[in-house]
Length: 223
Image (cartoon, rainbow, N blue to C red; front, side):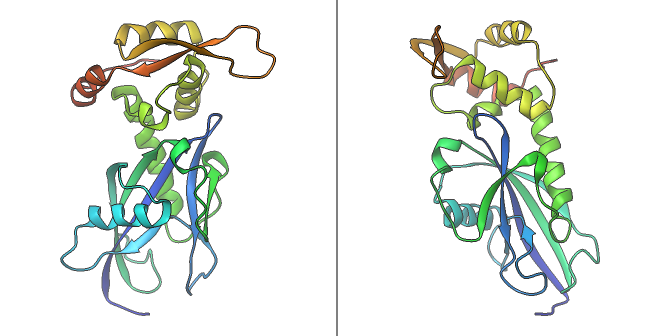
C-alpha cells in the first residue's frame, strides 16, 4: 500500500506486574517488516477522533473499556514510514495488571520495559517518551495507583515507584511522604506477601476523594 499522507495512532500500554514495569508489544501483520515488533497501532479514518480509535484498539486487543489514556505527542518525521507520510498521534495507557494478565491476544505479548525489543519506525522513541512522561507524572500526580490492585501493601507501592523512577528509594522517607499526603487508607487487614514471612503486611486502599483532588491539583514528591 502506498499513499501521500495518512494519520495513525500508536499506544504505549504499561502495567506493573508486581516486580517490574511491562509494556505491550505487537508484531506487524503485513509487509513491509512483516512480523517485526511494534507498538499497538491503527490507522485513523476521516471523521473519527484519534482518541476514540485508540480506545477501540485497547478494547479489541485487551478487552478493556475503562483505561487511563493520555495523549503523548505527534510523531511526524517525513520519512518515518516507507509507505508514505504518516503522522502518528501517540498515546500512553496505564493498566492494572490483575485486569489484563490473563488476556491472551494472538500477535501481542508483554515484555519488560527495560528489555524491550528493537521496533519498527520510531516506536522505540515513542516508548521512551512514554516512560519519561510516566516518570514525571508519578512525581506530580497519583497516577501510580491506576497500576495497583484495589488493595495493596506498602511494599507494592514502594516497588512500583522504584520501577517508575528507576532508582532506589529509602523506604522510611518514602513512607513518611506518602502518609503525609493522606492518599492511603489503612484497611486494617493484613496478608502474608510471601511464603515463610513471619510478619504480615498491612493492606491499604487509596483515598478516592484525596486522589481526585491531587489528580487535578498535583503535588510535588521529591524522592
